[in-house]
Length: 360
Image 1 (cartoon, rainbow, N blue to C red):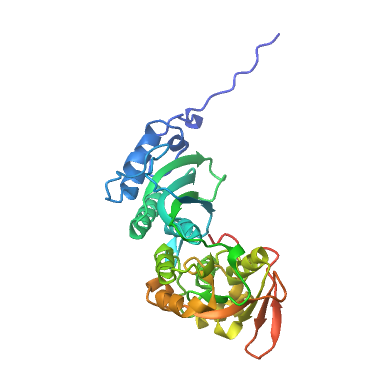
Image 2: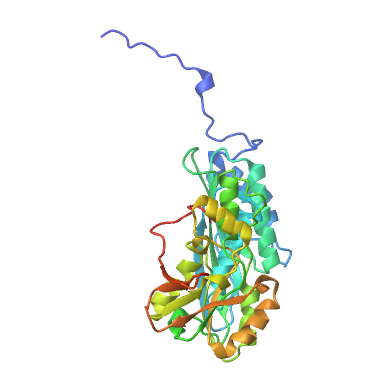
């Protein structure tokens, strides 16, 4: 048998199984559990997440939290927003605020967050560091520690730079009972401020469109606002809370209406839509009532408590623009009907899919 031809080996094609530690970008070795993983945690994540409250930053695999006796709220979410940075925030503070708000909507006081990162090979470490610092600052501002986390690296082309998964745990104070099943016909529907700003802020950067003014995301933690509302109503007349993120205001009120078996009548003229958001949505063919928000809440409140709750909201920075925008009704259960500025009414249908994908 003739000898098989020998294929020449080019040393330039060799791949080192453990990339050089001086790299300025994420490499597969950062997810391998070795020295590079250790250095990423020690030099980037731990300094970013150490709040200075004596926790020393997140633990590696699990955290032990001291929880008062009572009910616990747990939430988890994943963030794939694109672009990573936008007017008013970035994927890091959005992940922190969004998870805190999910807990707050059940009346819970957040006590700890987790953070998991899916990193694409080639991601710049400087960019990752900026996002980690942003997460740490947001958590510190909210008074909630990032107590544990995880990092995985995938090959180039397997992710879009980075994705963030967060989870949160909170304690529901004794006597607090908030949930859509408590909503009754006659409840006032309150929104805490302008709607549509987050989604338009994302789209303005993504599409490179100048709307004549900068629309800034409303991303913010809402647990302080919720605490102020609950303190103003010791009788449990705040029946339901929801943060109108994906699907916007319409999705939030319809979800509650369906759970409660009531209808919702909205006064569209009363809904605070900034002119900049209305103009942008008109240009893009979007309904501002179905554009995502990341720092607003919707509350269903017994009318006997409305004035007290509104006063508490307006006395808090995140609720300064709070207004009544409608009420729960016994008619058309599970549906939202809007009274337009022209005095006519319309059924407000949810979109089949997302108007703006990857806004959180």
